[in-house]
Amino acid sequence: MDSTKINQQLLHLVIGGELVCVDPQNCEFKDLDAVDFVGAYGSYEDARAAWKNAAQRTVDNAHMRYFIIHAHQLLDPHSDKRKT
Image (cartoon, rainbow, N blue to C red; front, side, top):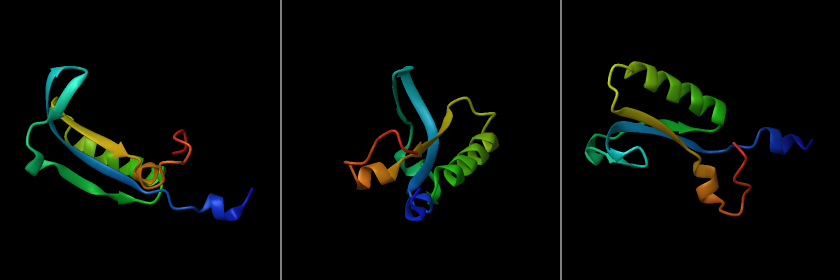
């Protein structure tokens, strides 16, 4: 395997906030000004650790959700969408 592929930076963003849901398939942030930008990470593993930490901090609020955005796929739309 090519070593440049192993260490390739894959940008992931972690954000979260309180959601308002009409139904489980139709949710949006309650207040966009209050969205919590947790950070930007160079690997899925680092992003997942940050996501898990943020989610655990807010476990008592059933309306609070955190997400991992695979920003590297947005930067390179021709990339394989199954990569993490």
